[in-house]
Image 1: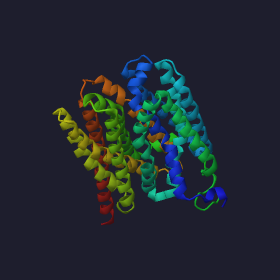
Image 2: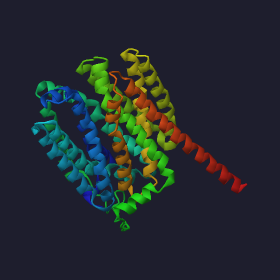
Image 3: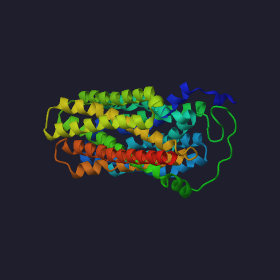
Image 4: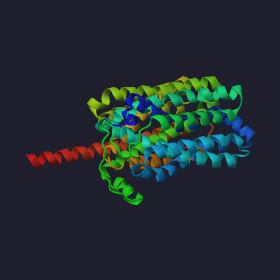
Length: 411
């Protein structure tokens, strides 16, 4: 085994998390700077908010291209391409002079960054095998440090200098990770990470063939829909929460960053709990447990906002909701990934494209139902969780029927 392949998971997992953190940093770090950015570019706040949807759309389209490439070409080279492109785009963003230029560069920043992040779930699946959900939870738990501190970092950079400094810092971060990847990330395309032996030559499939394999699997479809809808709930939160906290409840930027960090803490706690129990209980059981909690919390969030209760009720409702939806996401992804060991890049592309693509609609949906309150935000999150509940009830029913059929055959 080469020295490069003798890198322990203790180093690889934080490195993979650092790669995956690029997107949440890009999404969350400039949230508090949105009003300043709108003023600087002389554009309505709604246009700056739509930059989130543009980013999600660019990321989703990038996954369509780079996902199958991750199954065919060097993962390491794709990561370097994605990080390098992200760094260049981040350096260009402070130079824009109007909102059209800002949206265009944000689209390209997201599109190219997907080349780096698309390889991470497949790499985790390769390292952890049947315990993929545990590995994904570890990576997600470490990665969650990024969105936890990103709004606070953005606020500090905004107060210290300007909104432009936020994107220069993003460029510096991606460049540092780029250097770490060059030195420490093994290329798992041809070599088995655990044994160091050369893998059997893979059957070369076209993009279309790879997508047909994944999308043609009936068992995975309901979990894909669950992943999509829980993503809609998550990006509804990301898109709306600056408006809900800063405008509806009139909290300060500092309080906003604390409340945002509190909810990221819920995400991290959920991932930690998942790592403790998922091996013994299984991903399906953990998903169902989280779904029960999500249904209760989403119902509470909808109710307290329909009744227009004080801020504390919204905060208390969101905390368990964010934790539970993160647990649903990681376990649904693991259930899908383990079904396609030879097409992990394509699976990641399908999951990511559907997830980020649907997430891109959060902004327009919220804008369409805008009424100056937090009701559209709360009701959209409730609707998304309700669809996941329906999908998992169908899965449970199908599983029960299959067991009854098998039981009848052996009697």
